[in-house]
Structures are given as structure tokens and as C-alpha cells.
Length: 482
Ligand code: NAP
Image (cartoon, rainbow, N blue to C red; front, side):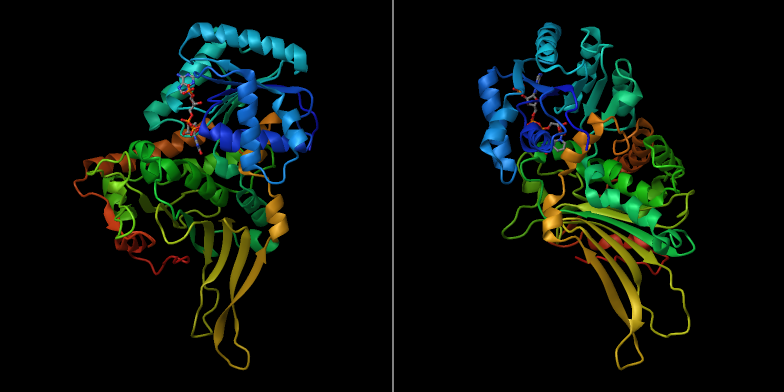
């Protein structure tokens, strides 16, 4: 890890939930490990009129609440790098005051003119902020200027294009870091290591050997207090356009020419460009949406706070993707995600084709990569049952130990370090955003024109029964049954 990286952060939305739960703890861990030392400062901004002292207290509180085994002296020392500027992002004059504060802190903390602007607030402001940063001269040419944006990046292809244009007027693509925090998860990063460094996997990572790929992002919770946001998004926009496509493209892409960010993005983009786009008939055949129906003790989605009692927003989606290029061309990718499902899990299962016809009984051969909450690799094999002649299913399991898991940096810590050193590998390129929205928009359009609401499913199940439709014409089925 590089030490004492000089940087000044401006966190827009500095009083918000994301900053409190994720961003300040991530910065603290980097401080504890030495990546950030004396030459960093943070300006938190939001409209409420906080003082520096009060802001430092909230930062300390964020660390105590969200980081294990903290040394209070270190937390105090850390919080003295934090400063607050009351700021309305729509007010031009506030950027001038903000710049004055930044310049004073740059000189005090010797941050070498390196500025990172983190937009931890509603996406409706991303364009306005980035335009003001340029117009009011907060983007300078002394050090680097990086812009970090949270998801969602747009609501559909059109809004994403507008946003990208607004950002592009002030920041070059190489300086824009679009967060998909799944890319900071260790087991997702491990997919590349596993597949590219082991002949055992590398040699069978193709359509000759792989029958299908299954990506499951299941949550056991409902929408909780985010009903208002969810009503504008739904499972397809909230999870498939970003997280599921990012995972699927890492599995489906060809071997990159090198491990540079450019070559990895190139490999991902090639495979995403090859995705089979669906017309309305295809959408109805290959995609199924659902909504949790509630029970005696739990709400249905329509009974959640800030949700319309007639809402047709999907809390579950399953579908089939096909890539027309790459090693897994034409191999079905079955994907699903939803709320109030049987179990919280993020996993990828690669089902292998049967390689023998000598034995009558045939078990599934599967490589399962569990990402969350487990960090586990399981290979399900065929073998002989002891003392009998029958084939049986054997499992080879590798799980990181509890101690190793406890040491895993949070996704945000990993991503913060990456953008501090200018490594864009685990961030989303504009081309990826564009292609995935194009795919998603076609599904949304079909659903909007469709009179049929989402299928109801039981809380605690794995989605509506109608999901089996996506396997029609095949012998495939879900490996993970919940
Ligand atoms: P939040 O708690 O509602 O925070 C919003 C922040 O924006 C507050 O600090 C608010 O402070 C500030 N703000 C609002 N309007 C402003 C204005 N006109 N000028 C200046 N500041 C303004 O939201 P959040 O949950 O932190 O989410 C932030 C972003 O991260 C969103 O894009 C969200 O989709 C994304 N995200 C969040 C999470 C999460 O776990 N929370 C996870 C993934 C992505 P004032 O009211 O004082 O101005």
C-alpha cells in the first residue's frame, strides 16, 4: 500500500447517510493503515449550518459506530483533518466560498493541489455540481482533479447521456470514477484471479464446457425505509443495470490482453457490446418480474411506507442474458435478484456440461462462487460412493477463515484506495453504462406497455413460480434453491 497520499477531498452530502456509514469509516481505515497521513484534508458540505467542531464530532461518531476496535486517540487525530462548509449545490456563490476554504486547507495540509470531489448525494445534482466546479474554477491544473459519483448513473439511457454530457464538459472520462460498490467486493475481484490463474478453470471457461451461468443477488430484507426511492427504480434498475451486469461481464469477457484498467475495460466492453438485445416478445419470454405479497406478520411491498397501494414496481426480477461474443458465447446467463427472498446471498454458479455417457446417473458439476455474506468457493463433482458402485455428488469447498474475513477491507475502503492511486479498474466506464441502459430500457418499455402487473410471490420464497418460464426449452434449473 502506498503511504501518505496527498489529497484534498470535498464530500458533497457530507451530512448524509452514505458518508456517515461508509465514506468516513473507509477514510479512517486508510488513515489507520497509513495510506492517508498528514497530507490529507476533507471538506464536508451540505446545506445545514454545522460548525467544524460539530462536523468533527459527527465524523468521530461515524467511526465509533461503524469500525471495530478503534483507538480513540487515533479517531481524534483523524477527525482533525475534517472541515465543514455550509453549501447549497445550486448556489453559484457558495462554490467561491468553498474554493477559498479549499485553498486555505491545501496550503495548511500540503495536499499538492490534488482534489477529489465525491458526490454522495442525489444524482439529480451531479450535473449541476460538476458544471459549477469547472465554471467557478474549482477544477485546477495544479494537481489532479477527480470526480467520484455514486450510483445510480441516470434513470435510463437518455438521462444517463445527458448526465454524462454535463459531467464530460468539466471532467475527462479518465478522471471520472463511477462507483459500483460490488466491484470493491473481494470475491468479485477474485473471479478474475480464479479463472485466469488456474488451468483447472481457465481450460474449461468456454461454451464447450459450460452449460449455463447463474447470478443470484438475493436479499432477505424488504425495501425498509427506502420505499420512496424504490418506487422510482425497481429491482431491474436498482440491481441489474449495474451490479448484475458488472458481475456477468467479468465472467463472460475474454481474457484481457493485460491486467491494466484499459485492457480490462476493453474486454468487458467487447462482451457487453455483444449482448443479445430483446424485442417485446423476447422480454416476455426471457424476463419475469415479481412483487412480494406479504403475510400475516410482514408487509407486502404495497403496504410499505412511501409506496403506492397500487404500485406495479417490481421487487424481483429474473431473466436470461446471452452474449454473442467471448468464451461463453450463447451460453445462457440466468440472473435474478429480489427483496424478501429466502436468504441473503450473492453468488455465481457455473454449471458444467456432462462429460461422460458411461454412467447412468448424472449429477450436476458446478463451480459456485459465493460472494456475500460467505466468501467461499465450492466445486461440486461426481465421484464414487464408498463401498458402492453408484455415482454420487462430492463437494470440494474452500472458505476463507473467520479471521481472514474479518480482515477484508470494506468495498468502499478498497475503492477509495483505488481512486486515490488513480486505478480505474474497479469503476464503471461510460460505455458500460450506455450499453446496459440500452438493454434495460427495452425491458422497461415492454413492461410499461404490458397490462399484466408483476407476479406476486411469497415473502421468504425465491420469487414467483412463473420464473421457471425462463428455462423453457432447456433442462436447466436453479442450482441455489434457497
Ligand atoms: P442522504 O442521507 O439523503 O444525504 C443527502 C445529502 O445531500 C445530505 O447530506 C444533504 O444535506 C445533502 N443535500 C441535499 N440537498 C442539497 C443541496 N441542495 N445542496 C447541498 N447539499 C444537499 O442520502 P444518502 O443515502 O447518503 O445517499 C447519497 C447518494 O448515495 C445517493 O445518490 C444514493 O443513491 C447513493 N447511495 C447511497 C447508499 C446508502 O447506503 N445510503 C448506497 C448506495 C448508493 P442537507 O439536507 O443538510 O443539505
